[in-house]
Every structure is written in C-alpha cells, then in structure tokens.
Image 1 (cartoon, rainbow, N blue to C red):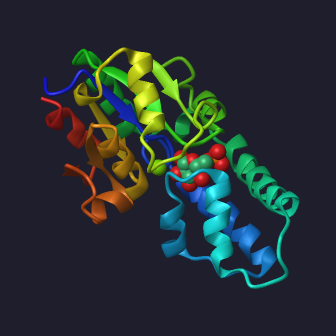
Image 2 (cartoon, rainbow, N blue to C red):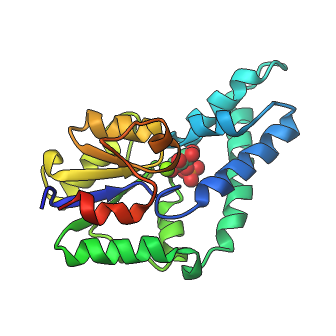
Length: 213
Ligand code: BG6
Ligand code: MG
C-alpha cells in the first residue's frame, strides 16, 4: 500500500455542500448588489468563511463596511447555509462515496477529515458519519485556512501518521496546495482536478481504491 491514511476534504468531496455554499453566498451577494458567479465561487473552495467574504467584497464599491457589518453578512450567509444543511440526511451520502470509504477502510487505511468548515460536526451528523472517521480536523481547531497546510498537518498528528504516508483528497485548488505544503500527495476531484492541481486528477472518487495500492 502506498499510504497509511487518507485525509478527505468535506465540502465537495464527501458531500455536495459546495452547492449549498454557492447558493447562500449568491443570495447574500444579490442582497448587497455585488456580482457573484461560478468563477468567483471556485475561488471560495477550501477558504474560511471570513476570507470568502473578503473575496466577494473585491467587487463591492459601496460605502466602507465595518468589521461588525462584515460579521453580520457572514452570519446572514451562514444562517441561510445552515437552513439547507437541516434538509440533509444519510440519503445524501452517495453510494460511490460510502462504498469507497468502506473499501479503503477494508484495505486497512486510517480515514480522516481535513476541512476548513466550522459546520463540519453538524454536516457529519446529518450524513450519519459522526463516529465514522478516525480523526476530524476542521475549521473549529485551526487558525489558518487552506492553502496553509495546518488543517491537514493536524489531521495527520491526530492519527499519529507521518505526512508522507497520508494522501489528501480535495476539490479545491487551495486545498491541493495545502496538502502539498504539508508534504502530502494529493488526489483531486471536480474543480481542482479540472485544473490539474493533484498528483492524481480523478473523474470519480472510486479511483482512490486503485491509487492507494
Ligand atoms: C470549506 C469550503 O470546506 O469550508 C469553503 O470549501 C467554506 O467554501 C469553508 O467557506 C468554511 O465553511 P463554513 O461552513 O465554516 O462557513
Ligand atoms: Mg472542498
């Protein structure tokens, strides 16, 4: 086996919450009269909530916003986002994701989450994965968001496995950069795969079972 552990990003890898993020940021941006599109949204992948807001505000040309107003906008977005998360259930876990996780575990690999999201515990609960992973490193225990490697380095530490023995799975270019900066190999999906950001760029998460061997 090439690796001892796999560290999965959450939004856009384990579940399609990246679409809910897009929808909530779009509503917030529309309310503020700021243009927002899929291209800008791709820059938000892997990035912390407040850093996402700053990226969106690059196109804001109204009166200066105080820190309090920015916090309120981020809160407004998160409230709308959490409303969509309430609808999630274990049925939202796709068979390809569940079967791949189970197959990787059966190969003797440790499985962890490395996500910038502060909503990680809630999402894992909604999906029925609360106790599934061997370690969960998320937006609640980091001070620097991707592309900084902190979230992945902490996940590897929690597992007690050296970074070079970990494979990161990501849909964000910032996340692929974070994995590489942490000394890990990276397998990409979605936007990051289409940009060739990974050591492997996959069409389907199922490819992992061959990649790790
Ligand atoms: C990442 C997403 O997983 O979490 C980002 O890719 C998001 O788009 C970040 O901004 C923070 O999420 P949350 O749930 O803490 O607002
Ligand atoms: Mg992601």
